[in-house]
Length: 112
Image (cartoon, rainbow, N blue to C red; front, side, top):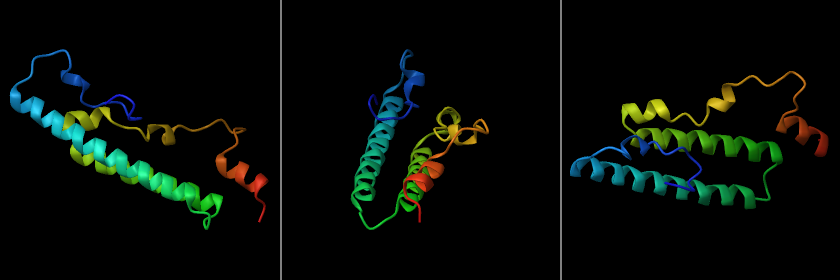
């Protein structure tokens, strides 16, 4: 699934021989993930265009949407694929102490 914004968890069988049922299963997974990502894109646009929410709330909603999307995709994957799919790992990395966050930027640009 190139261009989807996620590391494809289905690449593990790309070079090997697969049975008809394995191919069908991967295609059904791909279709399910594509639908999930399309729904995420629609919700992202809705959040972006909602002028009634503040920047901080917008970020919270984007993060919640990202978390929800990951959970929905993981529900489609098998155990082996789940081990390889962890797009939220970057959140567990501790940034350097002097690195500014998006929240810091929002406080400076939109004082309340």
